[in-house]
Image (cartoon, rainbow, N blue to C red; front, side):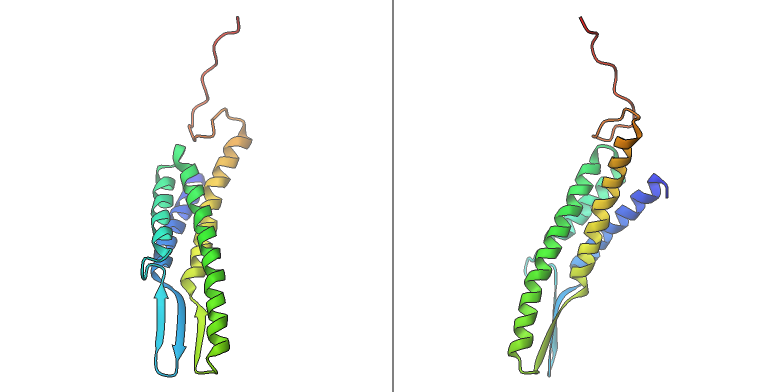
Length: 155
C-alpha cells in the first residue's frame, strides 16, 4: 500500500468517526417503544469525536507536519470511545437487571465504530512517522520531506 493510499484510509477513518458520532451510542427497547441516543445528543462526547475526526482527516490530507495531529486525534478518540463504552455498559447492565424483562438496553454500533475509527486514525500516521524514522533519510519528525541542512562548522 502506498503512502497516499494509507493517507486515504486514514482520512476515511476520520470520516467514519464523524459518521459514528451520529449513529446510536445506546439503545433502550421497551414493550411500547425503542429509544436511542447518538453521540451528539445533549452535547455528548460525540461532539468531541466528531471534531477530532474532522481534525484527523484534515491533518492527514495536509500530511507533513500535521501527522502528529492526526495521531493524537486518533488516540483521544480511542480513549473517549472506550470510556463511553464502559459507562454505557454499566447503565445497560443496570437497566437489564432492574427491568424485569420489560426493557432491554444495549451499547450502540456508533460507539464501537468510534473506537475502530480512532484505532485506524491513530495507526496510519504513526506507521508513516515510524517509517520515516526507520528509513534514515534524514527527514525530521515534523514531517519535512527534505533532509536537514548541515549544522554549523566545528571550531
